[in-house]
Image 1 (cartoon, protein in one colour):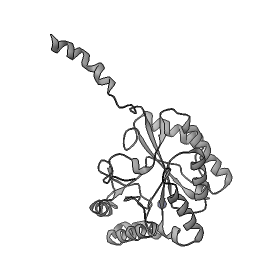
Image 2 (tube, helix red, strand yellow; image 1 turned 90 degrees about the vertical axis):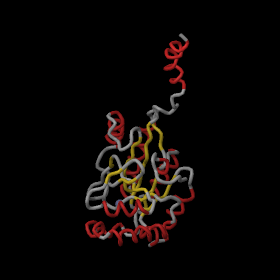
Image 3 (cartoon, rainbow, N blue to C red; image 1 turned 60 degrees about the horizontal axis):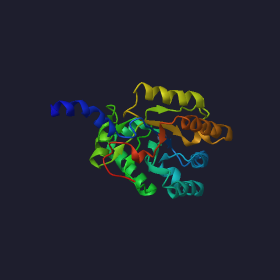
Image 4 (cartoon, rainbow, N blue to C red; image 1 turned 120 degrees about the vertical axis):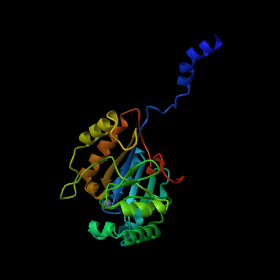
Length: 246
Ligand SMILES: [Zn+2]
């Protein structure tokens, strides 16, 4: 009889121990290819809106100018909001096919990027390719698979994206802020993200160089902040990474 009572009570007891954030949807804003014109606006807007963001930087861009180094320092200085990660040293100099066909050289390029950028994590993003390699998330085309394996053997995580705020031939945002916010909502609602309830948005720093375009970024962030269950997080908090990271 006691067993029956326990059996009846069990669901409500379990319900009490549901994780409190089971409704939370995690958004990772990622800005690629900086430091560039536009990086300063990304930093300013995220700081003003108090939202976390992650910068996948190119070593060459950081090291080639005083302004690049200054922006890099600004990102590194705000550890509570920002993460800086390795997006290679050269971005393959735009020659992606060659880059992925020569995984040893590509690995050296990432190691050079790491030396220049000094990231506090081992997260990388491939140039021009949406590949994933974490403990749980895997995605690599035949072309990039050899490099993904090398990254994995180094214990590094490869981070792709769930959706992109695209830019046109002039480098300006294609979709409206409203369209981006709706797409976020839709991907969460239909469980179309790499990891359930976690969504990575790819953007590029240069899209927000002009003031009018930077206002679009602020608008998009403002729209997403209206959802009570949406939380902005650094990419180092993405679940299933190979290393414990800050
Ligand atoms: Zn890139």
